[in-house]
Length: 225
Image 1 (spheres, rainbow, N blue to C red):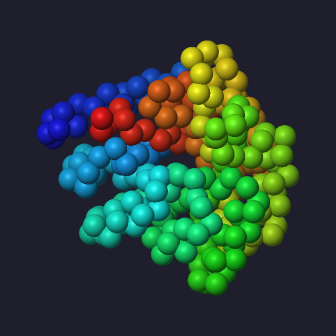
Image 2 (cartoon, one colour):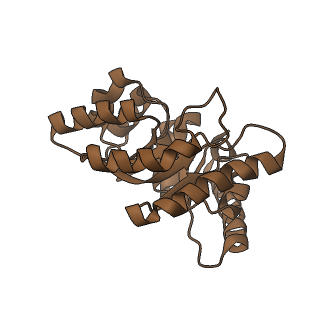
Image 3 (tube, rainbow, N blue to C red):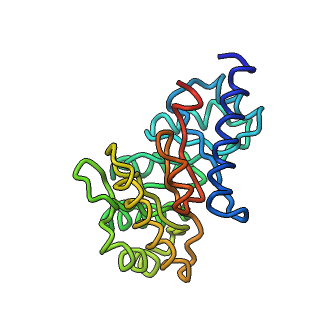
């Protein structure tokens, strides 16, 4: 893909985000995380040159390799994949801007211990399994508020910034919408606890997610495939 093609894809994405944002509210602000697992370092550099700053990786090893290979660019790296406990130290060394997939108290406890040992902190989002799909990780909606507050109280090295969800993986738009609305309602209740980010929506459903209140989307295939 050359620069003109990348510019066209990026422009079209930004335009669709803008349209969805205005349907929600002209005051609504949405940030794009470009999921770079679909592409190579040259295309990441190209998209960065076009103005994109936040990129997401779903494997710790890939994140580590990208951080090292592109360390000349002040990229805002997001870890968006499921985190295995034996990869926590590697993730801390990679030092992403944000970890979006904190999906249980057990993981939070393990992450807290390692962060304390390293003498550092990490910004995180708590992942909510709003559609209660067995194939997905995340906290069930009815447990989310209490768990969020527990992590705030018991894991001081984890800087919780909000919530993340993956929309229901079905063709029925009403079901997908309900999964986003469920997460957004929880996010609203957690605002007094400092929640600022509601990360919802990927390439197939980001417009619907924005209409439901998402202020951060994770888009890869629309840009790179």
